[in-house]
Image 1 (cartoon, rainbow, N blue to C red):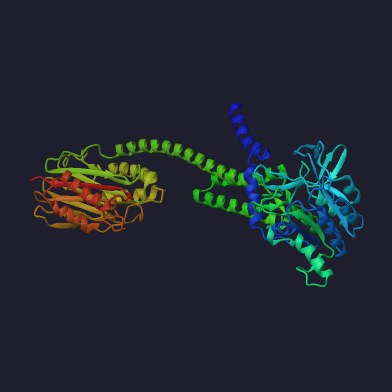
Image 2 (image 1 turned 180 degrees about the horizontal axis):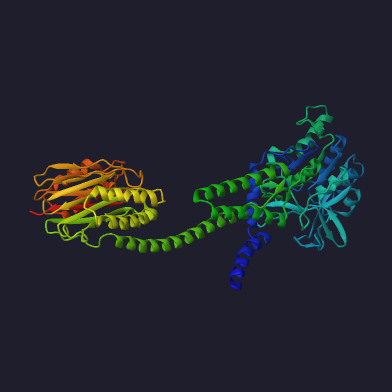
Length: 623
């Protein structure tokens, strides 16, 4: 027992460990990207303008990097145009002959100037705060003195190389540095009551509002310079410069194939100036992304998988499958809704993968258990069938005037068809002169019908042994079944007694199919009397009828499993086809006659499953 519980604990602990350890992080990132792509475009703040240095600017101004006089002019022009801030995503770490122009314009700027730095940050964190060993790419000290601030522009690619997060703060050399966009937001907006969501490693998820060309307002670097000069000269500008009034202008390199182009959840080539703009936009709009913690994801995992395991184990196969599909679909739908409306990123891949594994595992386990139980049941039914067959006559009687053959095939392991013979050994005057032959069919199939059949045979043997009138035997059986059998079943029965001395057949019918009398000459008569099945009406009275049999005449007794057998077109074998087979083989002895009937039946049914018990008794008067 301890080993059993230890195994259960290990099986339960493995999924928990995989969830907490984020073993499927690569796939979870892909589901996050899918949510980004399917999400409607997010509104962007009108305060942000991206000034991009793309191919047109490089081509018109000259080779990159530009002379800093152009950046100095940009500071001057944007200040005069009323820009709120100028944020450079361009590094100024080395001195240049044109620095004096930059410094002069920065000192006299009418807007705040921000420069980038790069820290030697490699993803390490200490007490939840990322840290770096040194400043890898600083800004020139002279530039820093004239700037409103210098923030780091480090991004943190995930394992697949896509940029989805950044640290907002990094500790380096005992000083706390701020991310560039975060610094601009703090200086220009009131964030005192804001709590920006960061994870345990101090990472902030970038809420990209959409694709590069469809979100922020973009302006060409060279178009702004040329348009300002044209405006001063009284000429028509390329662009409406008034749009830059009050804007936070972020200047960055967007030339295709540049070093500042990375992959993000929406595009394989996305300028990182757009990442800084997205961070700033998220803070301005107060619209953030946050990832559910390990505990929350674990709870969601259990909420999804435990009901699936329960319904797959307890429910029917179709209902279990329907619940599984519905639960997984609802979970995925909820994951998208949480992301779209609340910016919450929950793990999706692992819970769904585990839900599939739980459903399949539970279903397979349930199947194996049911298969084992089925094998045990089949074994028990096999024994039950052997016991049931022992209730039936073990051999056909040897009677000097007739030949007899029998056949019984059950639709299930056990069935409700029955037959028996009565030899009247207790009635000395008729012993060895008369033979009783009975065939019956219990309503229903399977084990209940088999138990009912066993008791009915026992009662038949009791009442038939002292009575030579078929109707009286049926009367007694009907009363016994009606009064004492509580299963709610009934029996159809045909009972006949053959008198060898006079070759007379006396018969009575309790709701069974009529017997077929096949004359030696090839004619057919149906033997029937009126009577309800046994076990329905206690006061039912049964009647006898009789017929003379000549040499070569045959009697065919059968149950409805013969006539009601169906082919793949749902057609029944029927009484007429049975008559045709009998007539075709009117010369045959009992056993060949049975084989002929079963052969035609098998040919008619084909591969269709047998749905009812099939029993045949054929007797033939000897010549």
